[in-house]
Length: 210
Image: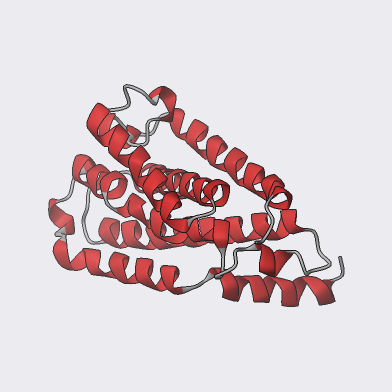
């Protein structure tokens, strides 16, 4: 694919992906510092902030990717000459990058202002939790054909792990940072997110518009 095609295609999909959900999530993150006192924050408080609150960023920005626009993502992808797989994955990666940058900025600000925690392990763990929940919601929205189902499924996972402390999800427990510092189970969550994203990209041709 030539550069003349890639650049406008990337810009077009950026405008489609960066919709109101990005603005809403940015506004919510910008409000967090007004309710926190960084100098009083230790690792446990930072973990609770990240895993239990900031991770909701994923539920805000990911599920709509499964059914973009009123008629679904297929209106945008199928008329194009480019294959839908890389376009869908580009949108997922773009949203993941936004999630990473937004959370990095927030935790970096807290760290600079005196919060006592390991910046990159806390940031990485929170980012993976957000992406995992959001990608699960995106997958549900695509399979069921309803964006509300995506938000419900993602929140159901959150609620299950919050109430059972990972009794049923095992190595895919969302809130590992609450138990200890960084552990390798976070990589399993990251791998699951990638697998679900690839699955969604492959599932798109099976869907048809009414």
